View 1 (cartoon, rainbow, N blue to C red):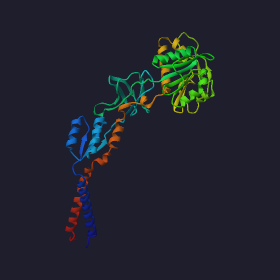
View 2: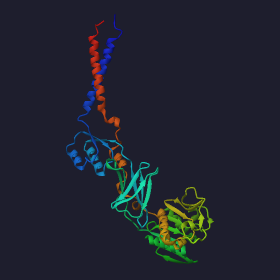
View 3: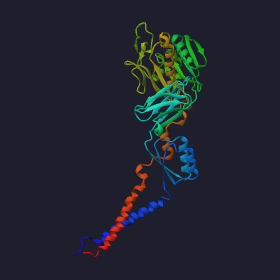
View 4: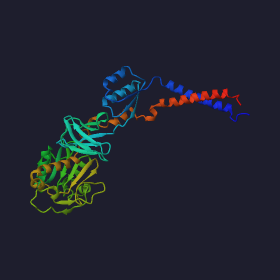
Length: 428
């Protein structure tokens, strides 16, 4: 009785399986001229190790499993090895994405704004060349902090040991070449706003109206020019005579701050202002307590124009708003007689009044990119690593040797199966 198995076809199938496995093993062996070295990035990977690899590379291709982003020097050295025809591949073994930005606003005091992004809920330690500065917990949009003084490079650190990730940025030096222009009527408000900004370190050019056709001029307030001036502050309706110059200055990149009545005297300034309101909110009644910003009178700026953003609210009222105007920014203040805050605010009134006005002016003041943006450092280590060495290699593609046992099994099964079929061909 003949066997129901079609032996020629079975033997052909087994022969093809064996040949296919043998072909794969041959191609893989030829393509791997020397063994790829897998190096775990630890403290052992030093400049000395990289120098040895540069002279006597251990393999044609180096496969690195990175648990933390390497320092800029090591990253650049790996790029140099790749350019010297030594393959460098890396896999991501849990590198934490972290980024820091250091921005110095146009402010003579040198205030630096730090913005940090990374994993939500991560604890970040901030430090500079002198030591720790502050700690932050990252939210969905990261975190930010303003620091009055920073020494050298600022660093943001997450984790510890071989899992520690550090991003760094160097804010630019303090630059205070431009002046402010103050326009208003001679009075307490003009006097103390100018005093607050000069105490901060600004040079203030002013034109204060004393009577029709009579003004007290300090410095050179006109012509308004971003090469000389950072911002113009129009406290009241006396600025209407210079509305055209103010609008052009703002659209060319200069900062504009409008007081409660600063936009009331000219249609062009009203069109520039973020707010369209003007409902008066009376100041809080005297209670014997020190005056504060929350107790001042207010012109409610609401409703705002479509592209305006409220910067400060007091209850349901908009107290400060800002908007873009061409290349510049315009802020509008609704608070009335802020000098009362300075004079009647107790022991902290002078400093609080000065700090608030300085921050408001700095938020719109003109500053070139070289003045504001941080330079140097390593602000985004993981992004820099991807930019330098390309995307990480998926773990599945890093271990072709894992298929070797399977291929050898297929080869052995095919050869033995064909031999056994030939031996049993004549058996009934």
